[in-house]
Length: 225
Ligand code: GTP
Ligand code: MG
Image 1 (cartoon, rainbow, N blue to C red):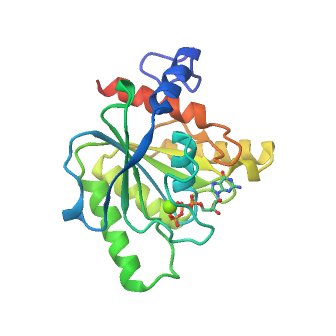
Image 2 (image 1 turned 90 degrees about the vertical axis):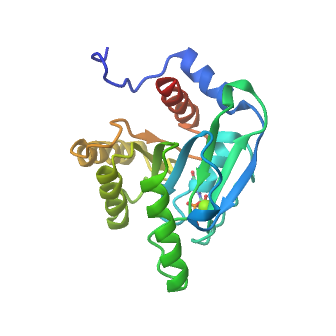
């Protein structure tokens, strides 16, 4: 049992089902923005997927929506170069939610001007978007938090933007190493004011943790209603 007001890391069957329904509809591309003036109007609740280049942001959006190639993925870092907005084409349960795929940060091999423009876009969007309900901060389970992640976390804490860490590529780790990584992250996040205290372990490859991520997004929307 968890205390009053404390988030529970377990999900009831009803929450898992509500999460499944939230993403069961047909998701589609809605908008792309390479700069702040090009952002779509703030109409819906948004959740954004941020993280280092190649961490698996676009793959996770595909896993969530059950679409193989809704978001473009690549084994080469720097695939997503704009903010890409996805919306549900139908389904009352999903109405009013947009998923935002973001360019990755921490990738030095792209031309400097490009990296500078992405970085500004990421910072400006994360700081100033009133409809942004939560940032899912993706971290490669094999690597843990890296310095560019710490920089983004500090910015989110300062701007009081709620975020939750999601481990990706957990299929690449043995169970004991994953448990160690989760414990390490819990300690690292405990002193961060805007961090949601539950770290989710996922794999877009095997689908593990995807039902729980859907349920946690359902919970978030419920709390905001
Ligand atoms: P950028 O848009 O370049 O920042 O990358 P991204 O974070 O969107 O990563 P993307 O989804 O394009 O995936 C990068 C690479 O990681 C691809 O080769 C994926 O196949 C691989 N990948 C993504 N998710 C997983 C996973 O759960 N397990 C494993 N093993 N590989 C994954
Ligand atoms: Mg991407």
